[in-house]
Image 1: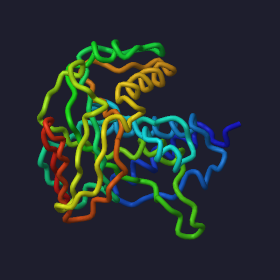
Image 2: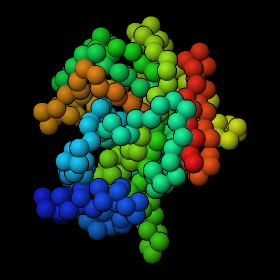
Image 3: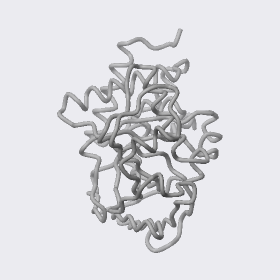
Image 4: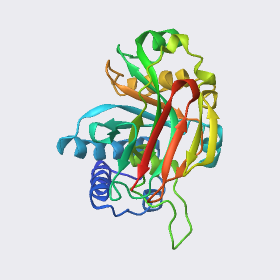
Length: 269
């Protein structure tokens, strides 16, 4: 017994979609439904995404989250999570993000996989992922939260079920111009120096993502295979952050220096 009904899933998903449109956060679902589990959370996410589909937004890929040990320990979990990318979430390198676009934006550094072939099933190998990858590119993920991070009355903080319900805190992606052959790139050593307003906030390497960013792609393909889904040619897949999320207040400017792989920039108006 999960403590949530299909109607609960639909209502919560629609509430999250409305929160995104209005810019007004909703309360912690984990408090309202203390027995909700990961299946409930993904069912709420699916309802939110169905509302986005109905509104005419187009799916362009996936994001993998909670891949670092530090983030998993913070939420007391042992597995990543996932969300869906849409066309309105894709920003050009150097973009200026409108002040009203997000509620509480944060920034993470990631390696994006752009696929040229489908990936399906629970027993994929590293070689399968590399063969299906057209190229990898440096990227920034823009996080946002339609659910409050902390309840002001009780002090309760967001749980993983809240994060998953909220499309894995997905907000947007800024994709760098670089295009690199994944099979000829040591992804474990592909990293960046992230600066906010000229100050180094975080540094990290691809190895921070499950020891190899490809591992996350394998995990995601296996997870969605459980529901009859697959990763498709043309998909953009954010493989997971190798730094902590950095707050992005109004007026902040971000530069992610990936060294030989180029820079990814964005400003928050």
